[in-house]
Image (cartoon, rainbow, N blue to C red; front, top):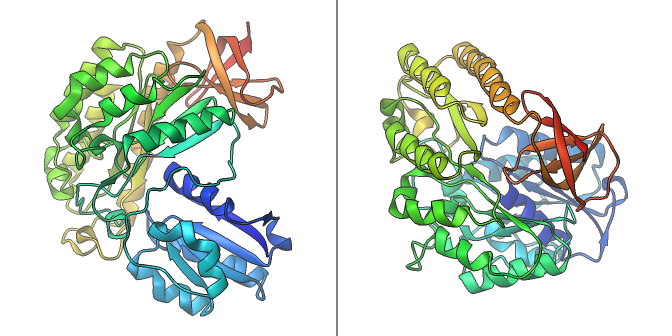
Length: 413
């Protein structure tokens, strides 16, 4: 069977897409495929995924379709309306997708597979994406991912270390540690993320680790230990820790389990010990009940914290979540305007942060081809565009010559 696989969403989904590809012998372009596998993301709702399925069905009405990934309960019936013959395989059963497709069997139950040490076809040959867990320990009012992923299941640290070894043996220069919530890793095993990272950096080889997204409410339990291990030269000085709002009443309505002050204390602890660390966060604007004053608190928070990266999302109701039916829904036009204001503010903050890197010289890893040449990452995981064609995985010394809102420009030194 000739197969084409398309993955959407987070790095964990990309890792699963690589494992899906690893189960099929002949991977081809969509137009040449007998089977199209759409590994979907529904974290921001079902529409994007449904549109992608409709597009394939419209362009290739006779092709077989399988849908994998974050299949929420609300999306099952709409998919079957588009294509009654589509095979649905959720995130818990992707290791069996080739068999399920052949037997035309849906698999939508919860399970606890260890999604490591499986055959895979890497999207990027120099990036090894290593899932460390499935599910989380939270029940945020806006999130549909918990409906799919379930409660936290941490993979064994020794198996994670073996996966990292395999990535390095394959030539990966970057190891992306990923999960729905990396910061609660190991709580079900009597360990934590910091202890795991200590084990990962002991793997022999020349590579750097990027730690993926984690909920701030869990970090105080082992903050000093995490700060200390993050100093290791094998770990990018990069932290993705979603605050989601700059007002405590909004955070309470979101059921986030942390406060603005918790977030600020964590960032302060990291910046004290690692001053040039890159901090990335997520913010939702227009959450139900969010007032104009509460949104202004978020703007003040952003001005005060001066974070490097903010992933901004307008609130969108996800079927099956508490927030979808909350009183006090914010009008779409207001959400749009708040998103515009926050985006403009963050552009100026990000540019200010990036200008501090002008003249910096040091090593960077080339990890992506871009329009003007290549993109590389330095020790703080800063995006550095180099206007030259270089092989992926090249480690070279660069000098920062330009600063833009969302990237730097460097020249080989």
